[in-house]
Figure 1 (cartoon, rainbow, N blue to C red):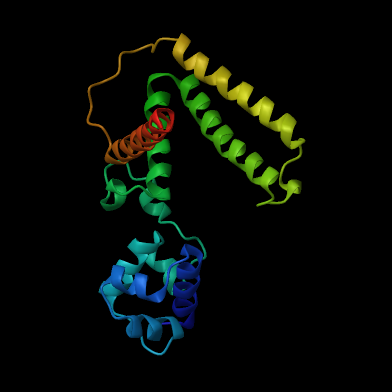
Figure 2 (figure 1 turned 45 degrees about the vertical axis):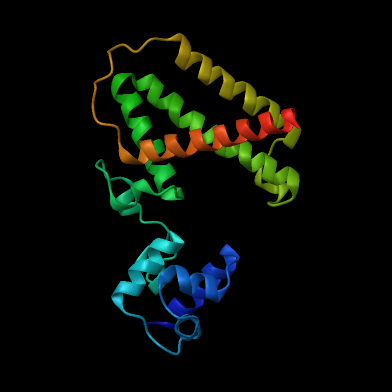
Amino acid sequence: MTNTFAVRMTELRSQRGASQKEVAEALGISQALLSHYEKGIRECGLDFLLKAASYYDVSCDYLLGRVDTRRRFHEDFKDGDIEFDSEFRTSTIFRASTMLHDRLAALNPAKGVQSKNYFALCVYQLVIHAVKSGYIPKSWISLPPDQASVLCKAKTEMIKNSVIAEQAAKPHKNDAQPLCLKTVIDSSEKLILKEAEAIINSLNT
């Protein structure tokens, strides 16, 4: 096992803001053993490699230094459910977006294009906020942040109104809900309800 494994294990823990003790407990090993892995003193077994990859939401190839891309893109484009679809992680959101796009495009190609544009604008809107807050350089976008924000919101609203206004050319099939979409929907609704509950509680105090 290369030293890249030790470096990336340390980097991923640091980026998560977790202590060795917290990660060791989550992965079912002692803190001393995790320390040895992160220092490259000892090599881990296959079971631990799989646990660590799942815990940090990266591929085994990334941990081993075989690739520099963290995600399992060969799984992200599978049509059927996969093991991690029940977990609310970045790859689950990506798969849910892809599957929703494919279903819309199958019924109406124009809706497929609109869904792709909508997802892109959602990412762009977050980029604008990150620029305004100083998390990423202003040079990443070419429009002035305030102007970009207004135009982005306007275009997003246009797409939403278009989806609502036009009926599907063909009725949807009663096919099974993909697990990744269920996970994203359930997680989103929990976030919404939690926020609504907080607002209600603040009004009652």
